[in-house]
Structures are given as structure tokens and as C-alpha cells.
Image (cartoon, rainbow, N blue to C red; front, top):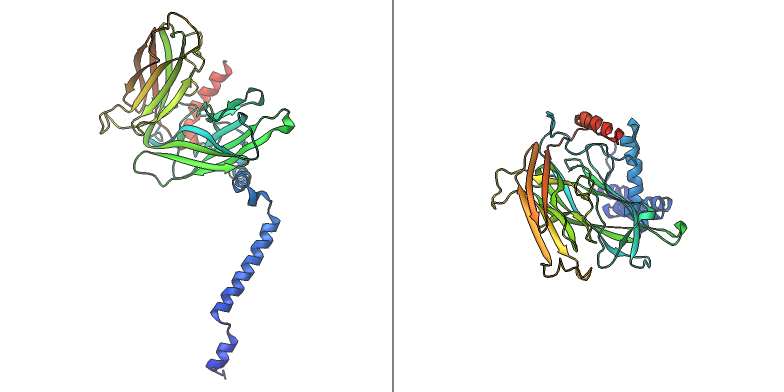
Length: 379
């Protein structure tokens, strides 16, 4: 027959709650100390760089099993659904990347910095690299304290954000006198996730890794379409002694322009057909029609001629205004094309915008990828 324990015996048999908690905490700390001792030092000294390495392992386990490589660049082109429909193509939430700034440096780096490497973004569509900055070691960008921004050249297609996060994939280096003296500037796999804002909004996010802190300025645009911009010189010549600045601004994020091209030295890069070689041409635009509540068109493409003082003493440019800027407005479309004309000083330009919806499924882009690969084979 079971014997009931007295209160005194029960109290002596069971440790006090405080003792149990202290013992559990001590055991946990001992286990954690042992785990930390077995982890690489980088996990304690540079967590973001350590997590970037872990992300690569995760990516290869999740997405590399189908034969893809972590270094694969997205083959999905822009304008995928301009001329063909798709039941999965629709308005999407997208990311508009405005700038990447080298905000701070450590480790005794001396400015200016000769920076090379890659910055790309990965989204749910194919999880591959959508390149927004890329420089080889023999073609570094010189970053100064006066102009600490990377010269962006992408994305090559719209960046789609959904319930799945996007990742900013960064591997930047500072060039030394020899390759062995190069230093790691930044190594990141920075995540941005969203539960879905009600309206378009602007973000500033800073991540520290290796010898720098990078500041990303980007917009989250809801219910948006993809717009691919091109500009062609159809009459006259670009004004001598002026540099060209081409920008795009959407009313979803007013007052924040996306730089498409800055010619700096005044020579406008063009192909033999007069088409301006924009550094960036893919813009995302919130789809609101016919006009938003402020009465403005949803996309404005602007061309600015900025007089380069002291460049020369050409009589043809004396007396001209320092800055001359003109812009044209476009109402967004789900598909199709739009065209506007700009006259600026001594030239006339044609601005074309190609509109397209987007899909979150890679399989939806099969025809577009096939056409893109065929066009590459003809080059």
C-alpha cells in the first residue's frame, strides 16, 4: 500500500523552484559556451559575414539541387509579358533600389577607395543574381568621401517581393597595390522581408560587415508594373559643354528620383542609332489610373543638361543656363508601349517606355527566357 509523504518530506524531496531555475540556467550557459567555442571566430566578430556564408550553404541545399549554381545570373529579361499574356502575370509588390552608399569604413582604409566586386539582389522568381553593381579588378570604381555612392547598373528586371524575402548579395573588395594586398570591404547576404505595406514607402537600411557599413536606400512599391525606359536622340546634337543626367521618378514615392545615367564628363554615350546607353533602364511604377490623388502622372522621366563650368571657353556655351531640365509624364499601363518627346537645348529626344506585368513563378517566363537566349546567340 502506497504511503503518503508528509509536507516536510515532500519539500525535502523536491528542490525549490529557484534552485531548479539556477541549475537549468547554469546548464544552458555551459552548453552555449561549449557551442561558441566550437563556432568560427567570425560568428562573434562579424556576424553578418558569418551569416552570409551560412546563406550560401542554405541556398545550395534549397535551390542548387536542380543543377543551378549560386553564381548564376538571372536569365529572366524585362518586358516578359509586354506582347504575350500569362494567367499568372499580374501587378506585384516590387523593390526600387535608389542608392548604395559606403557610409563608414574601419581597419585603417584610406580614401579614395578603389572598389570592385558585385552587389546583386535575389527574389522569389528564380533566386538567382539580379546584378545591380559589378566591377572587375581592372575596372574599379573610385569611391570618395565627397561621392561615396556605388555607380549602379541594375537591376536588369523588376525585383519582386512577396511573402518570401529578398536578399541583397554583396561581395565587395578594395584594390591594393597587388592582389594579395586587396581587402574585403563588405560580405553580406542581407535580408529584407515584409508582411505587405498598405502603400508604397521608402526605406534606409544599413548593414555592417568586414571593413564597412553600407547604406541601402530603396522603395517598396505596391500594386506595381515594370517599366523599361529607353531614350533616343532623333534631332540635333547633345549640347557641347554639358553633362547629361537622366532620372525617373514615380508618384508612389514622390521626391525620390532613380538615376538612370550621369555622363559626368559631358560626352553622352550613344550607339550608332542614336540610342542613349542608359546605365539603368528598369523602373517599377505603382499602377494607379488615370491619375493619383495628387493629380500627377505616375512616372516622370527627366533629362537635365548641367553646364560643366571651367571645362572650356567655347563661345557657344557662354551665357547659357547652368542647369536646363525637362521631364515628360507617363500613365502606367499593364502592357504595351508609350512614347513622349523632349526638346532640350540643341537636341530632340524620344523617350519610350515598355510596360509589363510580372509573375512570381519562374515557369511563367519560359517563352521570355527562350527568346532572350535566342537574341543573345545572335549577338
